[in-house]
Amino acid sequence: MNKKILILLFCLLFLGIFYFEALANQQEKISAYHGADSVFKAEGITVIWGVVRGNDEIDTMAYIKIIATEEAREHFKAYSVKATDAFSDSFEWLVKGKKLQAVNMVEQKRELFKDLTERTILLYDSAEIENFETEKEDMSIYYLSLPDTTPEYKTMEELKNYFVEAEKRLDKIETTVKTE
Image (cartoon, rainbow, N blue to C red; front, side):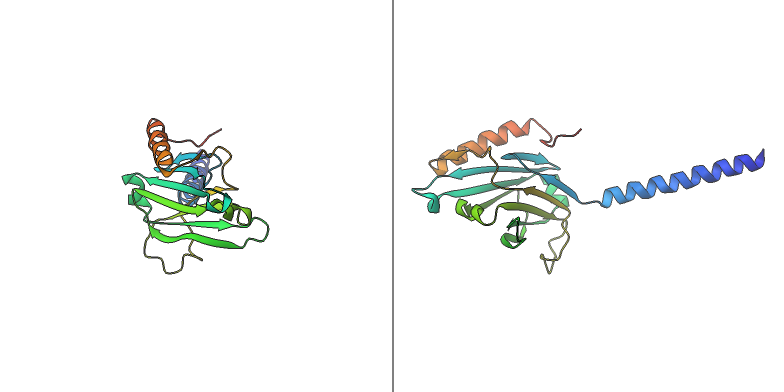
């Protein structure tokens, strides 16, 4: 009888160690999200896309507004935004290792999406990074292209009004990430 109890306790101990190791590994895992839509919210980070049309395509600008709650800024100290060609993996930094503020704006020519279609927002838990090209991010939000749902406006004022209204709508929800 004592031998059976000892074996049972040993098995429970082994399962407990396995469970806590798996839990620790899960907490170390990088959060990677597919942004997909022109509005995104998770882990205290909100991303809103918008376009201001110019006189022609060369003058048309795409904007990414990145909003970070105070709690998110306690965890994420810096961010980068990378534009990537899906076929060659060549890329260009749109933002590289900038301090994460409450409100961050990334401006780019929409024409850049012709060659560099993907966008990745990389968030880091440290601002003391020497080489952002090799640094592993703590969270990423990626887009395969300019989201189809991105609204277009004639003026920057209209875009700013949209951002305000979108933020108000998103204030009521915790996340836009769909869980199954």
